[in-house]
Length: 103
Image (cartoon, rainbow, N blue to C red):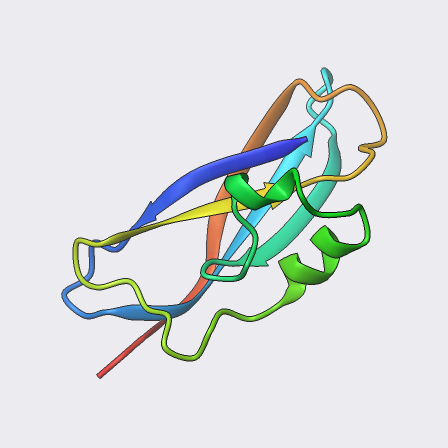
């Protein structure tokens, strides 16, 4: 199961080290999976199909490149991959866990 989206920086400064958390839920609203990723890592919708089931979890844990940042009013795409969820997925959510401003 893949959750993809775009994070938009509405701050007056650039941000880096942006971490997103996704959660998936069953029909009763019970959480059946949780995954945190860094925006700016090597995982994208374009390359997922070429990766192995072992590659994706490793890449999702990688920090972004040192020079990665999202400028004010800029945006960056993200992808969160859930492998073999424990049940039928009926809903999902995602949120920003952290972001570091640059000077």
